[in-house]
Image (cartoon, rainbow, N blue to C red; front, side, top):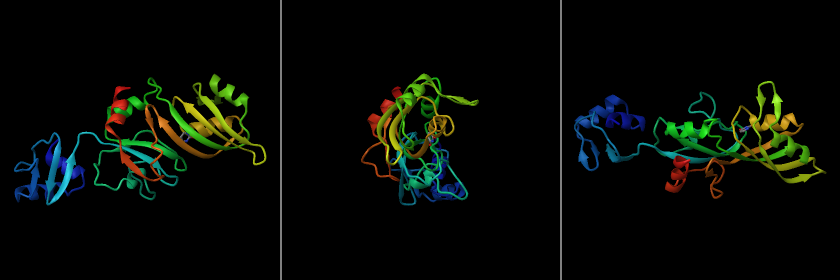
Amino acid sequence: MRIDRFLSDMGAGTRTEIKKAIKAGRVSAGGVTVTDPGMHVAGGEVVFCGRTYLYEPFVYYMLNKPAGVVTATEDRRQRTVLDLIEEPKRKDIFPVGRLDKDTEGLLLITNDGDLAHNLLSPKKHADKVYFVRLSGLVTGEDVTAFAAGLYVDETLTALPAELVILSTDAEKNTSECEITIREGKFHQVKRMFAAVGKEVLYLKRLRMGPLTLDPALPVGAWRRLTAEEIRALTEQ
Ligand code: URA
């Protein structure tokens, strides 16, 4: 990538400011002063007016999404999941798949389009595991219906899904379950439970393909993926 493009993608300044800084000898890459705004960077540190930016072709973040933020790259009125990543960041990152505003949990954010495509491709059927708290008592019949592939409405017959009942509380009329689905249709989990007469009160994604939500990551916090997590995702 061109160094001027990289710096503008990182929000270091406008293209004009960056060109000016390069002319003034205030930009270096790998310790060498840059003279050409069109120079390509392949990796390493770029220093712009005293501030260091790390050039990596691909970046990967794990976010423990809180409720109340939207899964979008930008929104005029509401806070987005990208607003939660506070380090200087590239402009080309995006969330992989969508969680509803009131859903919490695992969200992968990256600029690796091929990886995102692979994870979301219906052909690959990457498992998504959710913890669900519901109003209503989940039954063995629900487990069987989910496993068979549930008819939800004329727009959705879900692929077979695994439903594990963790607990039910007859007094409060609530249940807790873990559900594994292999697709990601709009409001899928909520619609599946609604189809068997239950209402989702709380939803949290725990896993997506080989990537598991780090239990040490507080709600609203993020971290970079480890090399091992990236390898597991790219090898799948
Ligand atoms: N299914 C839903 O209904 N909502 C989500 O956010 C994710 C899966």
